[in-house]
Length: 136
Image (cartoon, rainbow, N blue to C red):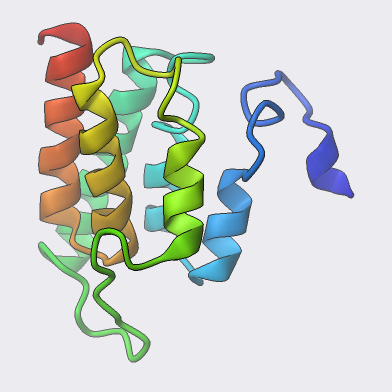
């Protein structure tokens, strides 16, 4: 399968569940996929810049859609802990990925917010993660 190798690095190969699996499972739009991709690799590729890229993507989504994208027919609010694939995806980042254990909680909440298309909350969670990891 093509997801068993990666061109240009190894930052996704180390994941048991790669971001693409979430994108397909939840039929994520471009904004959602890009917003999730960057924080899923930040310690292994772009660091703070990857987190800032994710915020930039979320800002674009907010500009295009507003704080929450409610107009899609397939909109569904995912509750924290309600989706096995999101939980499994998040768990692979729990150990050794973040400097501060509190960052995992922010990342976990960020995932649910992005998948629920609650871009405003996703941005808030990501800003908390940045503060916790980088103190800025």
